[in-house]
Amino acid sequence: MAIKNIEIQDGTGNIYYPHTDASIVKFGDSNANETLSEISMYTPVQDFLSFLNSNDSILLPSGTFILNQPLVASVLKNKKIKGYGKGRTVLKFVGNFNCFDFTDFGYANRFEMSDLTIEVDTTNSNSAIYLFANTSYIKNIKIKNVEIRCKDKAIGLYTGIKLLATNNQGIYKNEFDNIEIYYPNNGIVLRSEATNSGANVGWITFNLFNNPFVEGYSAYGIAIDDDTTVNVQTSDNHFVNPRILDFNNTTTVRTALKLGGVWNTFENLSEFNDGTTGKNYSLELVAPYGSLGGKWNYIKNGHLEGVIKNKQYLFNHNIDTYLIERDNASDTTVSKEKIKYEPSNSDITYYVMNGGNDDNSGLSNDADNALASINGVLKKLPNKIDNNIIIKVADGTYSESVYVTGYNGKGSITIIGNTLTPANVNVVLVSVYQNSIKVIVQGVTATTTSANAFTALYTPAEFVLCTATASTTTYSGLYASYGAIVHVASCTFSNKANAISSKYGAIVTSEVNGGSGNTNNLNASYGGTICKAGSQPGGTIVEATSYGGVIR
Image (tube, rainbow, N blue to C red; front, side, top):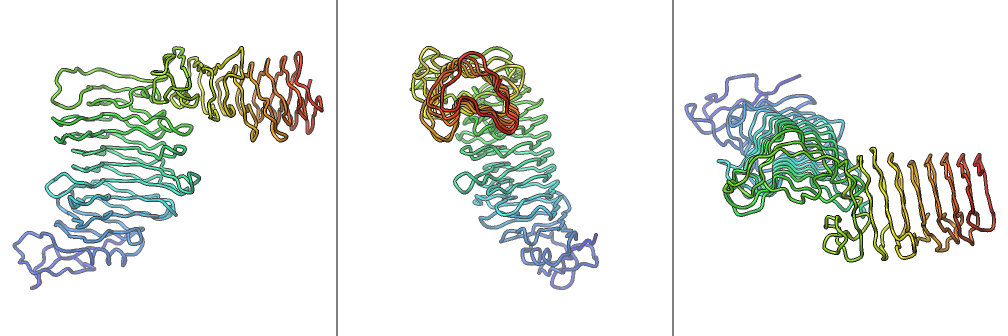
């Protein structure tokens, strides 16, 4: 590995930095006895990085070097920058831009930086270190022993480190060690977004933050801040020994940790609320989104000081830490307590009704507490369920497609509508898939004509006293596939291509079901099995089998 050094001389040749075989000489007009200070270095640093070969290094001496433009990915690829320590080698960025801009850096490239300070303007509202994956993955960036601040640690508008991914691109396997961030607006932000009306989602995963330190944030210390209109893509990032200090004495509301995403780990998290005014949230818990978002993050050991926002979502995560819950350090009436949240082993009943609100707890059967949708309940649930979850749905029409997916454990989920009059509880469809626990649906009517009314894939499921009679010549009343094990009883399926269909190794027990006007009453194909007990739905073809399907 070649190491290129910068030699700094004054106009008469006095050497500021010990003489080497430097590749660049920077001339100044100071004398040799003065301290090297604020020498404009943008052009030589940028040009020098472009000049370096792959895996070459630039060793910057002590001093403050002014840069008036960003350092961009094209010149940072496969380079290494090393200073002489935090506070000794200072890169001072003048202007409002992303200082180190790794936009579309690429997964085959590498970059390393260590032992220096990044200083930003107090008016800079961009990021000191910015990773943006839009047309290319970003991987193999290692940043170590770096301090980020405004001059004299003044309060700034900047974000210390931001990882942003979109358009099916990803940011992964990057490492940030011993990064100190002082008085930013946001310390560290991880965010995945979608383009093309939500079809192309970016992803951020397996990034490592060792000993990150954020002091005096104005908005967020650390934020996992996904676009919640799409499925989660920020997962499995690991924060080891993160320290977050609220020393900001403004009247603003601050949040130490915003917890979106899934399976992100915070080990030995220390958060101190030493601001004397305003309000500090130690945790802001995001309402679950997509199939997994806002769930199953892990806080292991540590200390939190501040109010918890959206406490109703605590049980979605695994949290084991100490908590002092207070607005700010002026509140001395609270005591320290150990908190531990994990999936409950007690049975829980949720209530859904027209006029409810998905922001409610769902734990009481009235409009002030009930939820507005079945999916609203499912988003509150952890993925591991060791208890029995009961969802009671009041009479009404719910314009939602219900998807029950991704649950495991020793418990069960039961959705109960009106078992006497199923037509009084209407949804678009119910799809149950990829669960290891049993899902039971009772007393519900599915109204769709453009999909299967009730579906079970890769899951154990039971459908009882359910109805689907809207006419379609393409889809089934019940469709079971891919190894699902299903019991269907006392249901009515009419006017379908198949009243009950079993495919690809699914096993369906059909017990005393009715209906009429179907093309096929029962249809088993591709190794699917239907076991009959009692009356069966009516139609043109009583039983259809093909490709190894069995009806018996």
